[in-house]
Length: 240
Image 1 (tube, rainbow, N blue to C red):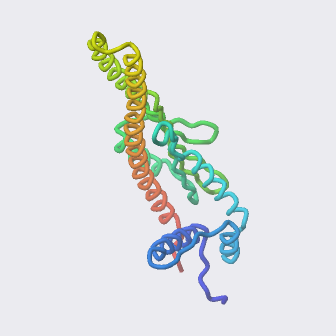
Image 2: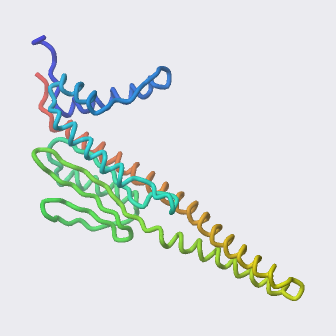
């Protein structure tokens, strides 16, 4: 119908996100199912959106999945990435508000620099970067952190080794009453137990730490996206 309202790209994106949320909630009551890429393309084609954008979006999502994947042997994630593409230009005033959100959340003043057309804010105490890149009238907001699990796991292994040494000292005290063969068995068991206990403890510590970082960054990034949405709303022309 010619009288139907037409929605711009930003509004369509918001509608689709809202539909997905409602679909997920209804899934608790009904038999909700996931959608394939082909099904998503059919939906967006009916809305007049290019299927190429679906390919781009799924590709970006795949990158996020790889970057946010837990590493089994360390017990948690070593990389975190949050990304959102918004319409329009992020002005300096809005960027300053976004950086202030990160400063309050992380307790780090950080440093802002411009590199190859991108504005990048980095912390001084963590390997964390917030990047703002503009291209073809749209802006990509990306918050990412690389975390090193070696210190946490190393400390846990050290604790396990100390436990092994304590057990070894106890065995040495008993060597006068323990036969040599049994002594060797006890040494091997203590070494294995100390190593496994240290590794397991390190994994548990790292899991808690990585989950804490993820929750912290997720909350900050949600506030950043809210600022971007508020900016976009102010830039929209008034409806006639």
